[in-house]
Length: 153
Image 1 (cartoon, rainbow, N blue to C red):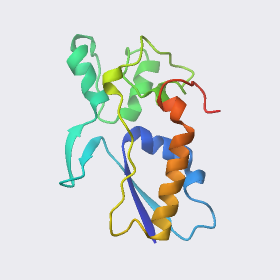
Image 2: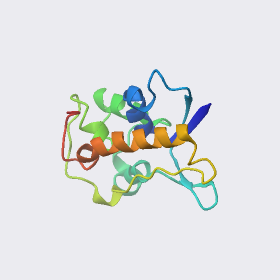
Image 3: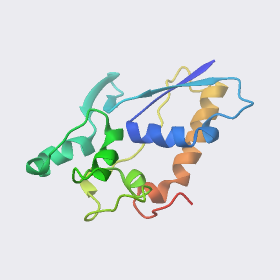
């Protein structure tokens, strides 16, 4: 059996960094992770917008943009290489000891995280197990998501 997970770049990164908390060796299912930057429109099952943190620089600092990437995972690499600043989620930037925050939180980028399951499949034991484990993992990082903690512990 396969449990399908769709997530944005950075939540997917957190899930893969903590994969042993999502799938245990004794589990009889596998995980199929789909990663993307479009936000799902659950009512129509279509993508309706690019993540706000990717749009923010164009709206507020377009004159400072010297490089762009089509995969957000390269943003910290560009900053480390001296290309300038990047807008990153707190839980990404704060964990990278080579990066430092510049300015305060961009409150207009704050948003909730949802775990959504297909109504027909949400009672399947493997789906429920994975959803519960992801919930536990994300809750354990809640201070980091809110920008209140700069370490994994």
